[in-house]
Length: 265
Image (cartoon, rainbow, N blue to C red; front, side, top):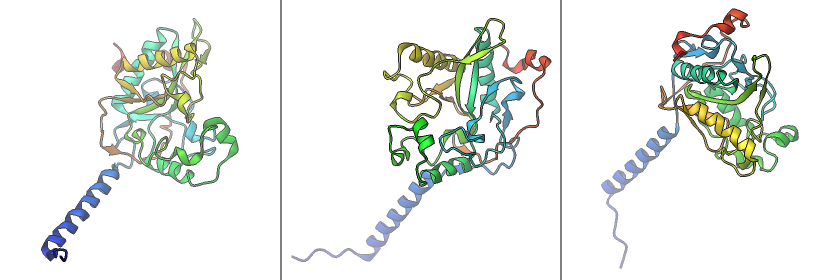
């Protein structure tokens, strides 16, 4: 018996549904990038406006990172965040200082163009120097999707990468706590609750997680250093304003003693 004929109107309708479904899927994958051209228009502030002497080493502005080179969009080693996240993070810092501890920042807001640079890097040849530090047990091809994705929450301005410093009694010298892996280590040992690190290292990670959670930051379980403010100020909007310096001078003694009233409790 011959197969029944599919009438053209039904075929057209089916094709239309398929096309619309494909377009919707692609739209869902594509981030909504804000048209903001300045940090002010994006609602962001330099964290030093909240805490003038915050400790930071913005890795993607230099060569000490898994790419081994400055990343697109990082024109200065500065930490910019949505003002809600900056205020919450400053409160974390002030609470830690009462315990002779401090935060040390690796990355904050990350432009969309920087994430695109990461994706291009995945197609480049391995650099044995960076591989030995950041992904010694993994093939580079395995980083795509699992560790490096086409979109990043950092581009929404409320996500930070950081660690903890322990300071002496008079706050004259601080040193990083041992977290068991370097920042941006790709592998299960970087999972916050990993049993591949010792009890002291895991306790340090938990101390960082608890301090951040007190002000609404949620840890990414696969990366002990990664925290996102919840609820996010702009959950569906990504930004592509370059990271630049706000032109702030080095903090003075008066700056170090000053605390923005917005972060006092």
